[in-house]
Structure formats: structure tokens, C-alpha cells
Length: 422
Ligand SMILES: [Zn+2]
Image (cartoon, rainbow, N blue to C red; front, side, top):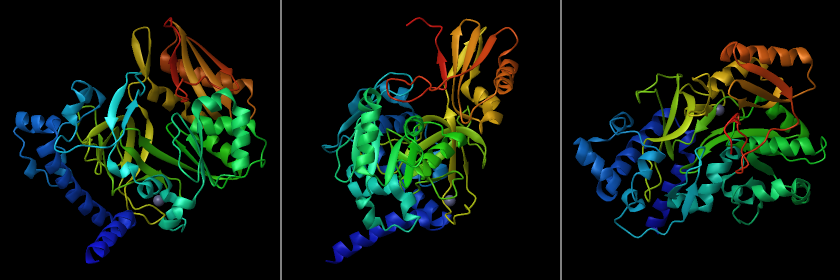
């Protein structure tokens, strides 16, 4: 009985931690890091080998700042080993295997933590913005989402449509969504946009939409909000660890899920970036003891603020600014997608989506899905801005399109190299 009560108190404090002070969250993260590092130091060969090689005493890693003494990991670090090497080998694990291909297209197999299999935690991770809108935790399981995903799961209360079904029959999929009358529509930003382009305004009313997996422009957000008469919440996660941060009603950065994730921003030499600076987003999953992800490079760029949000929450806020690694080479010069994003920035209110394609060795085509009808001078301005970035020798053409081509995963790519024969 007392055991049960203690368990319930522990659970309640877990689910409400993110609404407490920054100090309380940091204290929790320090002890979670201490527990996790002690665990991997005893049970995960990948980490025991690192500790041995580097002479690190696992009992000396007790805080967030101690954690920075451990190396940063990524998909490549894991891929160099057999799967057994990075799993907890002290006990049998009954968690499903997942595979992600990521932007490189190379598959990476990993194992979920048990928390991700817990429906209550899953709802909490995906829908916590509703808690901030006074929905009770116990009521989250009654929320009915329509989710368009690559691999749809089957849970009661939801409508799950696979990306291939949606691509093959968008009209039929929209009819299913309409008949289901979801509380929330959840998918990649480009899919939300695609649906909103196919339905007439106010034809389907959905209270909320969740956008993830891609950059959401301000014009795309307001278009989706107008068509469905909904509020769009942007959220950030990676497949390996799940949801990392969620927007609040202020829509100014995403609150890090502090009870589950520790997020760091580092520079190109793996050093810390000071408050508010841009860098690589590194995450430690505090809950996955099956295949622990410690200081895992998400492959994204972002920045973090520890200032209290206007909504009152003190958990740090994260802004994602795109993936690193994506670039186009022109005349031997690599131009990063963030450079293109910066050049396109001043047009962001006018553009719903864009794609920059290298069509041959010296030519770029900028494909624009406009937010509102566009005039020629704006296209000339955009082409000019990109020309300044890439140099006068490249042929730059800006053109209006109704949609941009998506990858087989359903995601849209901002940069594509079409000069490579396939
Ligand atoms: Zn907030």
C-alpha cells in the first residue's frame, strides 16, 4: 500500500517536473545523469570501453557539466560496432527494434527505451502543450489525433494514415480525416501544408495541428491555421530518442522536455556555446536504459535560451535552425543550407515553401511555393539575393511552383542536387 502510494507520488512528480523551477529541473537532470552514467558504466560495453580507454571514473560524472567530459556520439560512432556493443547486456531486453535511415539514407538500427512503450508517457511526450491549456494528464488518452506517418502505429482513439497511403490517395485520406473529426492533425510541416492546400477554408475544423520533422515557415503556419481554424504547435524530436521539445502557446521556441532529455548546444569543436548562441544540438536521453543515447548528435543546428518564457515555464527553450551536413557545391565551393536559409530569410513571410536545386554544374533553380500570389519583381529579388550568395558565375533562376518534390519518406528537402545522374 505504502509502496503503491510512493510510486504514485514519484510518477506525479515526474509528470509535473517541467512546470517547476529551472533549479528543480536542473537538480533532477543532475541526478538522472549520475544514475544513467553509472548504469552504462556497468552494463553497456560501448561505454565501459570508452571509460577504460579515457581513464574516466564513472562515479565522477555527477552533474550536467561533468557530462561534457564524455565524448559526443552520433550514428557513425554506433555503426562502427555490433549492435550488442551498445545495448545494456546485463539483462534480456524486450523492446522493439527500430530502423531509421536519416538524411544520409544509410540505415541505423536502435532499440527504444521502455518509457516510449508506456502509453501515458507517450501521450505526455506528444501532447504536453494541452496540459498547459488546462487539460488533465488523465484526459490526454481521450484526445483523438489523426496522424500521417511513415510507419503508422495502431492505438485506440486515433486515425493513423501511412505516408504511402496519403501520397497514393490524398483525396481519400482527407475524406477519412474529415469523417474521423480529429482533435489534432499531426504530421510533417509539408504534409500539413499539402492537406491545407487541398481543402477549402473552414471545410474541416480541427482545433490543433502538430508540425514536426521539418522547418515550419511563418507563412506555412498561418496558412494551416487559417484553413483549419486551428492553432499550430511545432515540436522537435528525433526518431532515436523521441520528442525532445514542444512549443507553448506563446510559440516562441520549444520547451525542452527536461524530465526526459538533457540538451546541449556545442560548436564545431564540440565546445560549449554560451546562452543563446547557435550550434549543434546534442541530446542525452535520460530514460532509455536499454540502448542509452548519451551526448548524441542529432544532426541539427539550433540555439537554446534559459530565460523564463512569457508563459511562465522555466524550462529552457530550443529553436531549431535546420540540419547540418546539407550543402550544395558550386565551382568547388560548398554552400551550406543555412547560408541559403539566411539569404531567403527576408522573404519568409511571402514564401510557403521553397526548394533550391542544383540542376547542372553551374546552374541553380529556386522553386517557390508562394504564400500569396506573387509578382515578378519578388522573384527577381529572390534570384538576386541567391546570386549574391553563390557568385556571378552561376546561373540562378527563380520560378513559381505549386508544390516541391518530396523524398520517399514524405519529407521535403530544401536543397537537392539534380546534377548527379541517378
Ligand atoms: Zn513558454
